[in-house]
Length: 448
Image 1 (cartoon, rainbow, N blue to C red):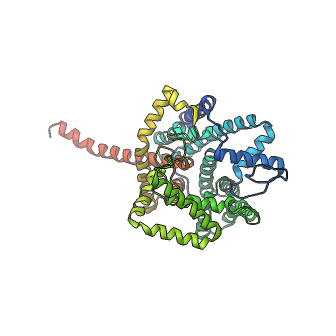
Image 2: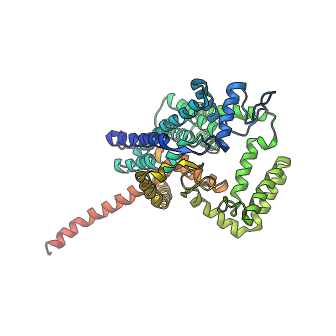
Image 3: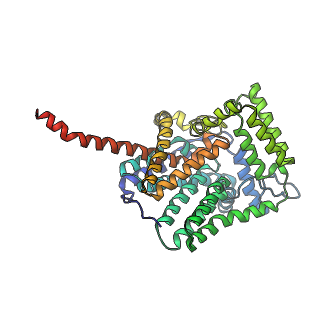
């Protein structure tokens, strides 16, 4: 167990105002925005799975036939299960759709609150409020809540996992490991990329300290995803509808520097060739995993200089502004009414955030160095280490996978906290320097 950071951890009236602002902006956005065919692509699959669970008790992305539906393992279960529950409660598809958006407004505001609570454990109140304010007004974090997509729910569960993990590290007892373990498991059931963080975390905790609290956390964090993995392993499904094929598609997409920048130009020769390589790679993987990995290695070594530069640029692409594999800017699907385009206040807010985006990204990486320097000086702050770890994990993961700005949205709060931390460190050093020079200036002004 570690001691909590010695800072004021109360939200205060300022913190509550930031949370209220985040909630009001989200409610306003979903009440005004109109999506062109909102249940398309990924959203249609989530809704279809939920209806199949509700009507046939089968987790499937298939369109129902007279024989029913065939189970598959293409999607994680958490988000469709949430939709199925809301569908059972509210009945019609329209009511279910609006209940999802309203719930995501609440989850978005809760994400702002957790961002503040984590930041208050790391830095002075003004800078913590800055991190929370960025989470409250950041356009991507608002617009994603207006789609039937996982990013808002997953982002809430990831930052809830971070906060409850910090509580577990700081406090004794059995409640904190239970809440932390269930939070981590829920995040992994919404998006399985969380397992890439939770499994090494459990291993590290078990090696660092062996106690019943860590065992309890490990069982709860990994148990539910493991049970679902067993279900997937025993589910007979088409190869193309398996979760592993979806992961390989993401890896193959991430290997193509000609695909992402030219995604919207279907007639571009380089983009067409990249699409063909991705499709061929998937087909090979479905027949022979070893041959697919051999082809990937051959591809990586075919243009080592170009692909090395591509992979080095992917962290910046991941934390960039525009959503490439989507409508663009801050929208995933085309909009009939786009509030960040039509509302003057929101347009100004988006313009300011757009201008700040590269500055915040660079400041966040500087924040990583600030946390590492604290660790090197034996100044352990559990919240800072957890925030840094999740930010680095997301960056490394999407350096391997597809670096689309859409996938950065669940991890944006950690970027904001680290950027605010870097700013607070610089501000502190400037203030210290000024105080050190103040007596000298007083002496000089006396003429001595």
